[in-house]
Length: 485
Ligand code: UD1
Ligand code: MG
Image 1 (cartoon, rainbow, N blue to C red):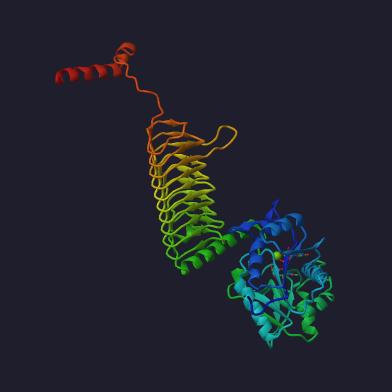
Image 2 (image 1 turned 180 degrees about the horizontal axis):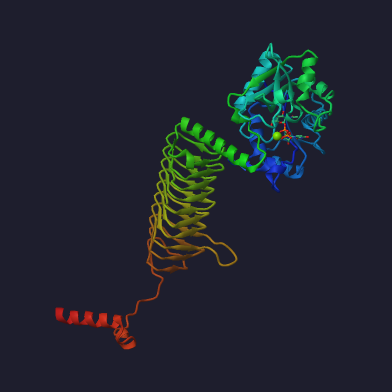
Protein backbone atom coordinates (compact mmCIF):
# COMPACT_ATOMS: atom_id res chain seq x y z
CA UNK A 1 0.00 0.00 0.00
CA UNK A 2 1.08 3.54 -0.73
CA UNK A 3 2.71 5.42 2.14
CA UNK A 4 0.81 8.56 1.13
CA UNK A 5 -2.61 7.05 0.76
CA UNK A 6 -4.96 9.70 -0.65
CA UNK A 7 -8.47 10.19 0.66
CA UNK A 8 -9.73 10.13 -2.91
CA UNK A 9 -8.71 9.93 -6.53
CA UNK A 10 -11.03 11.76 -8.92
CA UNK A 11 -10.94 10.66 -12.56
CA UNK A 12 -12.42 13.17 -15.01
CA UNK A 13 -14.25 11.36 -17.78
CA UNK A 14 -17.39 13.33 -18.56
CA UNK A 15 -16.26 14.83 -21.86
CA UNK A 16 -17.54 13.54 -25.18
CA UNK A 17 -14.31 13.24 -27.12
CA UNK A 18 -15.84 14.42 -30.40
CA UNK A 19 -12.53 14.21 -32.23
CA UNK A 20 -12.55 10.43 -31.94
CA UNK A 21 -15.46 10.49 -34.46
CA UNK A 22 -16.87 7.39 -32.84
CA UNK A 23 -20.11 6.00 -31.45
CA UNK A 24 -17.99 4.62 -28.59
CA UNK A 25 -17.28 7.17 -25.84
CA UNK A 26 -13.64 8.24 -25.93
CA UNK A 27 -12.65 6.81 -22.57
CA UNK A 28 -13.96 3.36 -23.56
CA UNK A 29 -11.64 3.00 -26.54
CA UNK A 30 -9.16 0.21 -25.96
CA UNK A 31 -5.40 0.11 -26.07
CA UNK A 32 -3.37 -2.90 -24.98
CA UNK A 33 -6.37 -4.77 -23.63
CA UNK A 34 -7.82 -2.04 -21.42
CA UNK A 35 -10.09 0.93 -21.95
CA UNK A 36 -8.46 4.34 -21.68
CA UNK A 37 -10.27 4.98 -18.40
CA UNK A 38 -9.34 1.45 -17.29
CA UNK A 39 -5.64 2.28 -17.58
CA UNK A 40 -6.16 5.39 -15.48
CA UNK A 41 -8.22 3.54 -12.87
CA UNK A 42 -5.53 0.82 -12.72
CA UNK A 43 -2.74 3.39 -12.21
CA UNK A 44 -4.84 5.17 -9.57
CA UNK A 45 -5.29 1.82 -7.82
CA UNK A 46 -1.54 1.84 -7.06
CA UNK A 47 -2.24 4.70 -4.64
CA UNK A 48 -4.81 2.57 -2.74
CA UNK A 49 -7.11 5.58 -2.31
CA UNK A 50 -9.94 5.38 0.19
CA UNK A 51 -12.32 6.45 -2.59
CA UNK A 52 -12.06 6.33 -6.35
CA UNK A 53 -14.63 8.49 -8.14
CA UNK A 54 -15.01 8.65 -11.89
CA UNK A 55 -16.91 11.72 -13.10
CA UNK A 56 -19.15 10.62 -15.96
CA UNK A 57 -21.39 12.67 -18.22
CA UNK A 58 -21.42 11.92 -21.90
CA UNK A 59 -22.67 8.35 -22.54
CA UNK A 60 -22.71 7.88 -18.78
CA UNK A 61 -24.74 4.65 -18.90
CA UNK A 62 -22.18 3.00 -21.12
CA UNK A 63 -19.20 4.26 -19.13
CA UNK A 64 -20.82 3.29 -15.83
CA UNK A 65 -21.75 -0.18 -17.09
CA UNK A 66 -18.17 -0.71 -18.24
CA UNK A 67 -16.73 0.36 -14.88
CA UNK A 68 -19.24 -1.79 -12.98
CA UNK A 69 -18.23 -4.92 -14.91
CA UNK A 70 -14.50 -4.42 -15.27
CA UNK A 71 -13.70 -2.37 -12.15
CA UNK A 72 -16.43 -3.22 -9.64
CA UNK A 73 -16.46 -0.98 -6.61
CA UNK A 74 -15.56 2.11 -8.63
CA UNK A 75 -17.84 4.96 -7.67
CA UNK A 76 -19.22 7.31 -10.32
CA UNK A 77 -20.50 10.88 -10.02
CA UNK A 78 -22.69 12.33 -12.75
CA UNK A 79 -21.89 15.71 -14.26
CA UNK A 80 -25.03 16.52 -16.23
CA UNK A 81 -23.50 19.36 -18.24
CA UNK A 82 -19.79 19.72 -18.91
CA UNK A 83 -19.16 23.10 -17.33
CA UNK A 84 -15.43 22.65 -16.89
CA UNK A 85 -12.84 20.62 -15.01
CA UNK A 86 -13.34 22.62 -11.79
CA UNK A 87 -17.07 21.97 -11.92
CA UNK A 88 -16.42 18.26 -12.51
CA UNK A 89 -14.17 17.99 -9.45
CA UNK A 90 -16.73 19.92 -7.37
CA UNK A 91 -19.38 17.37 -8.31
CA UNK A 92 -17.07 14.50 -7.39
CA UNK A 93 -16.36 16.00 -3.97
CA UNK A 94 -20.06 16.66 -3.36
CA UNK A 95 -20.84 13.03 -4.19
CA UNK A 96 -18.32 11.96 -1.54
CA UNK A 97 -19.72 14.44 1.00
CA UNK A 98 -22.98 12.57 0.65
CA UNK A 99 -21.27 9.53 2.13
CA UNK A 100 -20.62 11.47 5.34
CA UNK A 101 -16.90 10.90 4.81
CA UNK A 102 -14.56 13.75 5.55
CA UNK A 103 -12.05 14.60 2.87
CA UNK A 104 -9.38 15.98 5.11
CA UNK A 105 -6.63 14.07 3.31
CA UNK A 106 -5.15 14.34 -0.14
CA UNK A 107 -7.32 14.41 -3.26
CA UNK A 108 -5.60 13.38 -6.49
CA UNK A 109 -7.21 14.45 -9.79
CA UNK A 110 -6.43 12.73 -13.09
CA UNK A 111 -7.98 12.78 -16.56
CA UNK A 112 -9.64 9.68 -17.95
CA UNK A 113 -7.90 9.96 -21.31
CA UNK A 114 -4.22 9.71 -20.28
CA UNK A 115 -3.62 5.93 -20.47
CA UNK A 116 0.18 6.12 -20.29
CA UNK A 117 0.22 7.72 -16.84
CA UNK A 118 1.89 5.19 -14.55
CA UNK A 119 1.14 4.30 -10.96
CA UNK A 120 4.79 5.10 -10.20
CA UNK A 121 4.41 8.68 -11.43
CA UNK A 122 1.24 9.14 -9.36
CA UNK A 123 2.98 7.69 -6.32
CA UNK A 124 5.92 10.07 -6.82
CA UNK A 125 3.52 13.01 -7.14
CA UNK A 126 1.74 12.07 -3.90
CA UNK A 127 5.12 11.69 -2.15
CA UNK A 128 6.36 15.12 -3.31
CA UNK A 129 3.04 16.66 -2.29
CA UNK A 130 3.31 15.20 1.22
CA UNK A 131 7.04 15.83 1.68
CA UNK A 132 6.79 19.49 0.63
CA UNK A 133 3.62 20.10 2.66
CA UNK A 134 1.91 21.64 -0.38
CA UNK A 135 -1.68 22.76 -0.67
CA UNK A 136 -1.50 21.65 -4.31
CA UNK A 137 1.13 19.91 -6.41
CA UNK A 138 0.69 19.84 -10.17
CA UNK A 139 2.33 17.27 -12.42
CA UNK A 140 3.96 19.18 -15.25
CA UNK A 141 5.99 18.24 -18.29
CA UNK A 142 8.25 19.98 -20.76
CA UNK A 143 6.85 19.25 -24.20
CA UNK A 144 8.21 20.02 -27.66
CA UNK A 145 4.85 21.53 -28.72
CA UNK A 146 2.72 23.04 -25.97
CA UNK A 147 -0.13 24.13 -28.27
CA UNK A 148 -3.53 23.60 -26.66
CA UNK A 149 -2.24 22.86 -23.17
CA UNK A 150 -2.47 24.99 -20.05
CA UNK A 151 0.91 26.70 -19.45
CA UNK A 152 2.72 26.66 -16.11
CA UNK A 153 3.51 30.23 -15.09
CA UNK A 154 6.46 30.62 -12.71
CA UNK A 155 7.81 33.60 -10.80
CA UNK A 156 10.76 34.94 -12.83
CA UNK A 157 12.87 35.52 -9.73
CA UNK A 158 12.12 32.49 -7.53
CA UNK A 159 10.91 29.93 -10.09
CA UNK A 160 7.88 29.24 -7.88
CA UNK A 161 4.66 28.27 -9.66
CA UNK A 162 2.26 31.19 -9.61
CA UNK A 163 -0.55 29.73 -11.68
CA UNK A 164 -1.75 28.01 -14.83
CA UNK A 165 -3.04 29.86 -17.85
CA UNK A 166 -5.10 28.05 -20.47
CA UNK A 167 -3.95 28.17 -24.08
CA UNK A 168 -7.02 30.15 -25.16
CA UNK A 169 -6.49 32.71 -22.41
CA UNK A 170 -2.70 32.97 -22.72
CA UNK A 171 -0.69 35.94 -23.98
CA UNK A 172 1.90 35.55 -26.77
CA UNK A 173 4.68 35.44 -24.18
CA UNK A 174 2.85 32.80 -22.11
CA UNK A 175 2.19 30.68 -25.20
CA UNK A 176 5.97 30.36 -25.66
CA UNK A 177 6.19 28.44 -22.36
CA UNK A 178 7.01 24.76 -22.94
CA UNK A 179 6.16 23.57 -19.44
CA UNK A 180 2.54 22.43 -19.46
CA UNK A 181 -0.14 21.24 -17.10
CA UNK A 182 -0.61 17.49 -17.42
CA UNK A 183 -4.06 17.74 -15.83
CA UNK A 184 -2.86 15.63 -12.90
CA UNK A 185 -2.84 17.16 -9.42
CA UNK A 186 -2.55 16.33 -5.74
CA UNK A 187 -4.59 18.67 -3.51
CA UNK A 188 -5.28 19.14 0.13
CA UNK A 189 -8.92 18.04 0.06
CA UNK A 190 -10.27 20.69 2.39
CA UNK A 191 -8.44 23.58 0.70
CA UNK A 192 -9.52 22.25 -2.71
CA UNK A 193 -13.18 22.23 -1.71
CA UNK A 194 -12.92 25.80 -0.39
CA UNK A 195 -11.05 27.09 -3.45
CA UNK A 196 -13.47 25.45 -5.92
CA UNK A 197 -16.20 27.60 -4.41
CA UNK A 198 -14.23 30.67 -5.52
CA UNK A 199 -13.50 29.63 -9.12
CA UNK A 200 -15.10 32.01 -11.64
CA UNK A 201 -16.18 31.52 -15.22
CA UNK A 202 -14.92 34.77 -16.75
CA UNK A 203 -12.61 33.05 -19.22
CA UNK A 204 -12.66 32.41 -22.96
CA UNK A 205 -14.59 29.15 -22.56
CA UNK A 206 -16.98 30.33 -19.85
CA UNK A 207 -16.04 27.27 -17.78
CA UNK A 208 -15.00 26.59 -14.21
CA UNK A 209 -11.30 25.83 -14.62
CA UNK A 210 -9.73 23.49 -12.08
CA UNK A 211 -6.45 25.14 -12.99
CA UNK A 212 -7.63 28.43 -11.43
CA UNK A 213 -7.42 26.75 -8.01
CA UNK A 214 -3.64 27.10 -8.09
CA UNK A 215 -3.72 30.87 -8.33
CA UNK A 216 -6.48 31.08 -5.70
CA UNK A 217 -4.52 28.96 -3.22
CA UNK A 218 -1.30 30.84 -3.86
CA UNK A 219 -2.95 34.20 -3.33
CA UNK A 220 -4.36 32.92 -0.03
CA UNK A 221 -0.77 32.22 1.01
CA UNK A 222 -0.69 28.42 0.60
CA UNK A 223 2.18 26.39 -0.82
CA UNK A 224 1.85 25.60 -4.50
CA UNK A 225 4.31 23.07 -5.93
CA UNK A 226 5.08 21.32 -9.18
CA UNK A 227 6.53 17.94 -9.98
CA UNK A 228 8.04 17.61 -13.46
CA UNK A 229 7.36 14.26 -15.14
CA UNK A 230 10.53 12.43 -16.12
CA UNK A 231 9.05 11.47 -19.49
CA UNK A 232 6.59 13.87 -21.10
CA UNK A 233 5.11 11.05 -23.21
CA UNK A 234 3.51 9.66 -20.08
CA UNK A 235 0.97 12.47 -19.94
CA UNK A 236 -0.11 12.14 -23.57
CA UNK A 237 -3.85 12.79 -23.67
CA UNK A 238 -5.89 11.00 -26.32
CA UNK A 239 -8.12 13.20 -28.44
CA UNK A 240 -8.17 11.38 -31.79
CA UNK A 241 -7.34 7.97 -33.28
CA UNK A 242 -3.88 9.04 -34.40
CA UNK A 243 -3.00 9.71 -30.75
CA UNK A 244 -4.74 6.46 -29.82
CA UNK A 245 -2.40 4.51 -32.11
CA UNK A 246 0.62 6.45 -30.85
CA UNK A 247 -0.32 5.71 -27.23
CA UNK A 248 -0.73 2.02 -28.04
CA UNK A 249 2.69 1.95 -29.67
CA UNK A 250 4.33 3.63 -26.67
CA UNK A 251 2.51 1.44 -24.14
CA UNK A 252 3.27 -1.72 -26.10
CA UNK A 253 6.97 -0.80 -26.16
CA UNK A 254 6.87 -0.12 -22.42
CA UNK A 255 5.17 -3.47 -21.68
CA UNK A 256 7.65 -5.39 -23.83
CA UNK A 257 10.57 -3.57 -22.23
CA UNK A 258 9.32 -4.59 -18.78
CA UNK A 259 8.99 -8.20 -19.97
CA UNK A 260 12.51 -8.21 -21.42
CA UNK A 261 14.00 -6.74 -18.25
CA UNK A 262 12.20 -9.49 -16.37
CA UNK A 263 14.02 -12.13 -18.45
CA UNK A 264 11.77 -12.69 -21.47
CA UNK A 265 13.37 -12.84 -24.93
CA UNK A 266 11.33 -10.74 -27.34
CA UNK A 267 12.96 -11.38 -30.69
CA UNK A 268 11.32 -8.46 -32.50
CA UNK A 269 9.53 -5.88 -30.32
CA UNK A 270 8.45 -3.96 -33.43
CA UNK A 271 6.15 -6.77 -34.59
CA UNK A 272 5.10 -8.10 -31.18
CA UNK A 273 1.86 -6.96 -29.58
CA UNK A 274 1.15 -7.55 -25.91
CA UNK A 275 -1.75 -6.57 -23.66
CA UNK A 276 -1.15 -4.95 -20.26
CA UNK A 277 -2.78 -8.00 -18.65
CA UNK A 278 -0.34 -10.59 -20.07
CA UNK A 279 2.16 -12.21 -17.71
CA UNK A 280 5.45 -13.99 -18.34
CA UNK A 281 8.03 -16.08 -16.57
CA UNK A 282 11.74 -15.75 -17.22
CA UNK A 283 13.31 -17.41 -20.26
CA UNK A 284 10.06 -17.37 -22.18
CA UNK A 285 10.73 -16.62 -25.86
CA UNK A 286 8.41 -14.61 -28.10
CA UNK A 287 9.06 -14.78 -31.85
CA UNK A 288 8.13 -12.07 -34.39
CA UNK A 289 4.57 -11.37 -35.46
CA UNK A 290 3.02 -12.58 -32.22
CA UNK A 291 0.02 -11.07 -30.41
CA UNK A 292 -0.49 -11.99 -26.76
CA UNK A 293 -3.85 -10.80 -25.51
CA UNK A 294 -6.02 -10.72 -22.41
CA UNK A 295 -5.11 -12.97 -19.50
CA UNK A 296 -2.48 -14.89 -21.45
CA UNK A 297 0.41 -16.34 -19.45
CA UNK A 298 3.68 -17.60 -20.95
CA UNK A 299 5.62 -19.78 -18.52
CA UNK A 300 9.32 -20.44 -18.18
CA UNK A 301 11.12 -21.77 -21.28
CA UNK A 302 7.91 -21.71 -23.31
CA UNK A 303 8.33 -20.49 -26.88
CA UNK A 304 5.55 -18.80 -28.82
CA UNK A 305 5.40 -17.58 -32.40
CA UNK A 306 6.23 -16.60 -34.98
CA UNK A 307 2.87 -15.34 -36.26
CA UNK A 308 0.78 -16.54 -33.36
CA UNK A 309 -2.25 -15.00 -31.63
CA UNK A 310 -3.02 -16.15 -28.11
CA UNK A 311 -5.95 -14.76 -26.11
CA UNK A 312 -6.65 -15.70 -22.48
CA UNK A 313 -4.37 -18.70 -22.96
CA UNK A 314 -1.89 -20.31 -20.59
CA UNK A 315 1.25 -21.75 -22.14
CA UNK A 316 2.97 -23.92 -19.55
CA UNK A 317 6.71 -24.32 -19.18
CA UNK A 318 8.67 -25.59 -22.14
CA UNK A 319 5.67 -25.70 -24.47
CA UNK A 320 6.06 -24.60 -28.09
CA UNK A 321 3.37 -22.78 -30.10
CA UNK A 322 4.18 -22.01 -33.73
CA UNK A 323 2.07 -20.08 -36.27
CA UNK A 324 -1.14 -20.78 -34.40
CA UNK A 325 -4.23 -19.15 -32.91
CA UNK A 326 -5.61 -19.96 -29.45
CA UNK A 327 -8.46 -18.56 -27.38
CA UNK A 328 -9.06 -19.57 -23.76
CA UNK A 329 -6.86 -22.65 -24.05
CA UNK A 330 -4.40 -24.31 -21.70
CA UNK A 331 -1.27 -25.71 -23.27
CA UNK A 332 0.49 -28.20 -21.01
CA UNK A 333 4.17 -28.37 -20.12
CA UNK A 334 6.38 -29.29 -23.09
CA UNK A 335 3.36 -29.63 -25.38
CA UNK A 336 3.83 -28.80 -29.06
CA UNK A 337 1.23 -26.85 -31.04
CA UNK A 338 1.25 -26.04 -34.76
CA UNK A 339 2.27 -24.89 -37.18
CA UNK A 340 -1.25 -23.79 -38.20
CA UNK A 341 -3.30 -25.09 -35.31
CA UNK A 342 -6.49 -23.44 -33.99
CA UNK A 343 -7.28 -23.98 -30.32
CA UNK A 344 -10.72 -22.78 -29.29
CA UNK A 345 -12.18 -22.21 -25.80
CA UNK A 346 -12.02 -25.15 -23.42
CA UNK A 347 -9.00 -26.78 -25.00
CA UNK A 348 -6.71 -28.39 -22.42
CA UNK A 349 -3.55 -30.03 -23.65
CA UNK A 350 -1.65 -32.37 -21.35
CA UNK A 351 2.04 -32.71 -20.68
CA UNK A 352 4.06 -33.35 -23.86
CA UNK A 353 0.96 -33.65 -26.01
CA UNK A 354 1.01 -32.58 -29.64
CA UNK A 355 -1.49 -30.74 -31.83
CA UNK A 356 -0.06 -30.62 -35.31
CA UNK A 357 -0.64 -28.89 -38.63
CA UNK A 358 -4.17 -27.87 -39.64
CA UNK A 359 -5.81 -29.23 -36.51
CA UNK A 360 -8.73 -27.49 -34.77
CA UNK A 361 -9.55 -28.34 -31.16
CA UNK A 362 -12.55 -27.10 -29.15
CA UNK A 363 -13.75 -27.89 -25.62
CA UNK A 364 -11.57 -30.96 -25.34
CA UNK A 365 -9.08 -32.45 -22.92
CA UNK A 366 -6.08 -34.12 -24.50
CA UNK A 367 -4.04 -36.39 -22.22
CA UNK A 368 -0.32 -36.63 -21.55
CA UNK A 369 1.77 -37.58 -24.57
CA UNK A 370 -1.30 -37.82 -26.81
CA UNK A 371 -0.93 -36.69 -30.41
CA UNK A 372 -3.33 -35.27 -32.96
CA UNK A 373 -0.70 -34.63 -35.59
CA UNK A 374 -2.45 -33.77 -38.87
CA UNK A 375 -5.55 -32.23 -40.48
CA UNK A 376 -8.20 -33.02 -37.89
CA UNK A 377 -11.12 -31.54 -35.94
CA UNK A 378 -11.45 -32.49 -32.28
CA UNK A 379 -14.59 -31.09 -30.64
CA UNK A 380 -16.18 -31.96 -27.28
CA UNK A 381 -13.83 -34.82 -26.50
CA UNK A 382 -11.84 -36.38 -23.73
CA UNK A 383 -8.76 -38.27 -24.88
CA UNK A 384 -6.57 -40.24 -22.47
CA UNK A 385 -2.79 -40.51 -22.34
CA UNK A 386 -0.39 -41.68 -25.06
CA UNK A 387 -3.10 -42.06 -27.67
CA UNK A 388 -2.53 -41.28 -31.35
CA UNK A 389 -5.31 -39.89 -33.51
CA UNK A 390 -4.85 -40.71 -37.20
CA UNK A 391 -4.53 -37.99 -39.80
CA UNK A 392 -7.64 -36.34 -41.22
CA UNK A 393 -10.00 -37.43 -38.45
CA UNK A 394 -13.18 -35.64 -37.49
CA UNK A 395 -14.90 -35.79 -34.14
CA UNK A 396 -18.48 -35.59 -35.39
CA UNK A 397 -19.95 -33.78 -32.39
CA UNK A 398 -23.00 -32.04 -33.85
CA UNK A 399 -26.24 -33.73 -34.90
CA UNK A 400 -27.70 -30.50 -36.18
CA UNK A 401 -29.35 -29.71 -32.85
CA UNK A 402 -27.08 -30.77 -30.00
CA UNK A 403 -23.38 -31.24 -29.36
CA UNK A 404 -22.28 -34.68 -28.13
CA UNK A 405 -19.16 -35.94 -26.37
CA UNK A 406 -16.53 -38.42 -27.54
CA UNK A 407 -14.40 -40.30 -25.04
CA UNK A 408 -11.21 -42.03 -26.11
CA UNK A 409 -9.04 -43.98 -23.68
CA UNK A 410 -5.29 -44.17 -23.21
CA UNK A 411 -2.82 -45.90 -25.57
CA UNK A 412 -5.35 -45.98 -28.42
CA UNK A 413 -4.46 -45.86 -32.13
CA UNK A 414 -7.24 -44.52 -34.29
CA UNK A 415 -6.71 -44.94 -38.02
CA UNK A 416 -6.39 -42.16 -40.55
CA UNK A 417 -9.56 -40.58 -41.89
CA UNK A 418 -11.88 -41.69 -39.12
CA UNK A 419 -15.28 -40.13 -38.43
CA UNK A 420 -15.95 -40.55 -34.72
CA UNK A 421 -19.69 -39.99 -34.46
CA UNK A 422 -20.55 -38.76 -30.94
CA UNK A 423 -21.70 -39.81 -28.46
CA UNK A 424 -19.18 -42.62 -28.67
CA UNK A 425 -16.52 -44.18 -26.45
CA UNK A 426 -13.34 -45.98 -27.43
CA UNK A 427 -11.78 -48.06 -24.66
CA UNK A 428 -8.14 -48.13 -23.54
CA UNK A 429 -5.67 -49.68 -25.92
CA UNK A 430 -8.21 -50.01 -28.75
CA UNK A 431 -7.41 -49.54 -32.45
CA UNK A 432 -9.64 -48.41 -35.30
CA UNK A 433 -9.04 -49.08 -38.97
CA UNK A 434 -8.28 -46.31 -41.45
CA UNK A 435 -11.34 -44.82 -43.10
CA UNK A 436 -13.72 -46.00 -40.39
CA UNK A 437 -16.95 -44.27 -39.46
CA UNK A 438 -17.19 -45.17 -35.78
CA UNK A 439 -20.78 -44.97 -34.57
CA UNK A 440 -20.70 -47.67 -31.87
CA UNK A 441 -18.56 -47.90 -28.75
CA UNK A 442 -15.30 -49.80 -29.16
CA UNK A 443 -14.36 -52.06 -26.21
CA UNK A 444 -10.86 -51.79 -24.72
CA UNK A 445 -8.22 -53.63 -26.70
CA UNK A 446 -10.43 -54.23 -29.78
CA UNK A 447 -9.85 -53.33 -33.41
CA UNK A 448 -12.89 -51.62 -34.91
CA UNK A 449 -13.30 -51.77 -38.67
CA UNK A 450 -16.23 -49.72 -39.94
CA UNK A 451 -15.95 -49.29 -43.68
CA UNK A 452 -17.15 -50.94 -46.89
CA UNK A 453 -15.32 -54.07 -48.08
CA UNK A 454 -13.04 -53.47 -51.05
CA UNK A 455 -14.17 -55.05 -54.36
CA UNK A 456 -11.85 -55.13 -57.45
CA UNK A 457 -13.70 -55.43 -60.79
CA UNK A 458 -11.04 -56.77 -63.13
CA UNK A 459 -10.83 -55.50 -66.71
CA UNK A 460 -13.33 -52.66 -66.07
CA UNK A 461 -11.16 -49.97 -67.68
CA UNK A 462 -10.55 -51.93 -70.88
CA UNK A 463 -14.29 -52.58 -71.23
CA UNK A 464 -15.66 -49.18 -70.20
CA UNK A 465 -12.85 -46.84 -71.30
CA UNK A 466 -11.43 -48.54 -74.37
CA UNK A 467 -8.59 -46.68 -76.08
CA UNK A 468 -8.07 -44.28 -73.12
CA UNK A 469 -4.62 -43.56 -71.74
CA UNK A 470 -5.65 -45.53 -68.67
CA UNK A 471 -6.65 -48.51 -70.80
CA UNK A 472 -3.35 -48.35 -72.68
CA UNK A 473 -1.40 -48.19 -69.42
CA UNK A 474 -3.35 -51.16 -68.08
CA UNK A 475 -2.66 -53.11 -71.30
CA UNK A 476 1.08 -52.33 -71.07
CA UNK A 477 1.12 -53.42 -67.40
CA UNK A 478 -0.58 -56.69 -68.35
CA UNK A 479 1.97 -57.31 -71.14
CA UNK A 480 4.81 -56.55 -68.71
CA UNK A 481 3.29 -59.03 -66.26
CA UNK A 482 3.11 -61.69 -69.00
CA UNK A 483 6.79 -61.20 -69.89
CA UNK A 484 7.87 -61.51 -66.26
CA UNK A 485 5.89 -64.68 -65.59
C1 UD1 B 1 -7.08 20.54 -19.52
C2 UD1 B 1 -6.46 21.59 -18.60
C3 UD1 B 1 -5.13 22.04 -19.23
C4 UD1 B 1 -4.22 20.86 -19.42
C5 UD1 B 1 -4.91 19.77 -20.22
C6 UD1 B 1 -4.06 18.50 -20.20
C7 UD1 B 1 -8.27 22.77 -17.49
C8 UD1 B 1 -9.09 24.00 -17.48
N1 UD1 B 1 -7.37 22.71 -18.46
O1 UD1 B 1 -7.37 21.16 -20.75
O2 UD1 B 1 -4.51 22.99 -18.37
O3 UD1 B 1 -3.02 21.27 -20.05
O4 UD1 B 1 -6.19 19.44 -19.66
O5 UD1 B 1 -4.57 17.56 -21.08
O6 UD1 B 1 -8.42 21.95 -16.61
N2 UD1 B 1 -13.94 17.04 -18.20
C9 UD1 B 1 -15.05 16.72 -17.45
N3 UD1 B 1 -16.01 17.67 -17.29
C10 UD1 B 1 -15.91 18.90 -17.81
C11 UD1 B 1 -14.77 19.21 -18.58
C12 UD1 B 1 -13.80 18.27 -18.76
O7 UD1 B 1 -15.17 15.61 -16.93
O8 UD1 B 1 -16.83 19.69 -17.61
C13 UD1 B 1 -12.91 16.02 -18.39
C14 UD1 B 1 -12.72 15.60 -19.83
O9 UD1 B 1 -13.53 14.47 -20.15
C15 UD1 B 1 -11.24 15.26 -19.85
C16 UD1 B 1 -10.64 16.15 -18.78
O10 UD1 B 1 -11.70 16.57 -17.96
O11 UD1 B 1 -11.01 13.91 -19.48
C17 UD1 B 1 -9.92 17.35 -19.36
O12 UD1 B 1 -10.86 18.12 -20.12
P1 UD1 B 1 -10.48 18.74 -21.52
O13 UD1 B 1 -11.66 19.40 -22.08
O14 UD1 B 1 -9.76 17.75 -22.35
O15 UD1 B 1 -9.46 19.87 -21.06
P2 UD1 B 1 -8.30 20.51 -21.90
O16 UD1 B 1 -8.85 21.63 -22.69
O17 UD1 B 1 -7.55 19.46 -22.61
MG1 MG C 1 -7.86 17.42 -23.20
